[in-house]
Length: 94
Image (cartoon, rainbow, N blue to C red; front, side):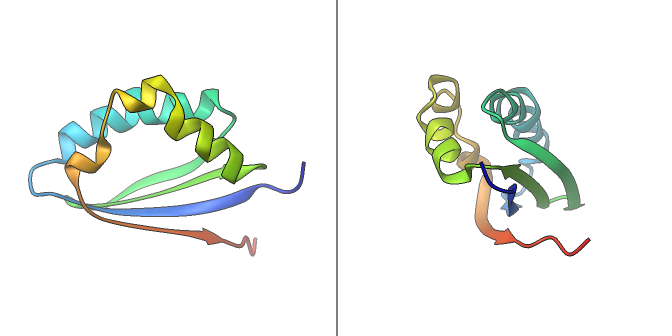
């Protein structure tokens, strides 16, 4: 396997969705990603409606497919809480 590939994920949440989204994130998204070998490098609230997190994996694309196909992930729909999603791979400087 190669070096960790890191993805930045920035979400704009719907008005009033912070608590419900945070519950799904902490109870389903994080444990499932970790079970599939992802590393959560940080998760931050920028405001009541802006959320930013960084997730990494050595084989990101394959692990991402497994994540979205997983039955536990299919039980929840975080996009129900989101207005917009921005994702991009980032390159570590330090």
